[in-house]
Image 1 (cartoon, rainbow, N blue to C red):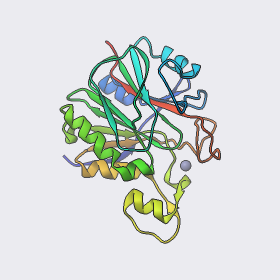
Image 2: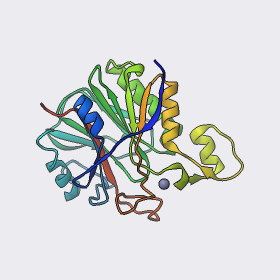
Image 3: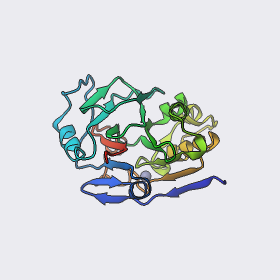
Image 4: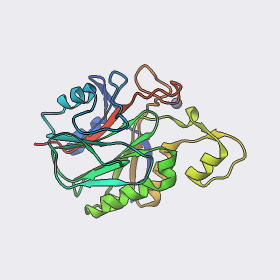
Length: 248
Ligand SMILES: [Zn+2]
């Protein structure tokens, strides 16, 4: 089977969220990203039960399908947490940049505002993953780490399907030669555009993944819909990206 070049996925706008409807229709997986209407930033010293009310509001909407949601403070590293059981309510796990699970009723969440939320699904083993990827994570090998965590749950890379969600696009994200070199290994002498989603897809392809799609949206292009850290001049507001196998 040939690799299917990254396609633009169709995203449904629903109740202020941006939902990957095709995964829900085809595989029954809940996949989405909140929009600019909610600020779901995680405080710097979070504890479960001390998150802003916006998290309660976010989770209330998911309560029928999920008993718990897990999120972490993100550190631009390569740590992925495997969740063997569903939690009850909103849980802040140890710092990490990705989560994987094969259990129903647990919603995995990360926060983003330009970085790429990478959604991963193994439709055969019925396992899901969600990774926060910026240039530092890319350089640290977070995607390799996530694919290894999915393999540990029994997934084969060739069965995996990935989607790179709403994030800053290549033409809005200029980086200097040092960042370019660390993130991609490519040498340059002047600042240039970095398309992190394209890098994620290329990396996944190298690891044996055959199906990938990208969101048609860019955070920096559309501040009315999304939070963009760079475009806003450093705002700390964040959206939540989420994936889960609903109870059913
Ligand atoms: Zn853009």
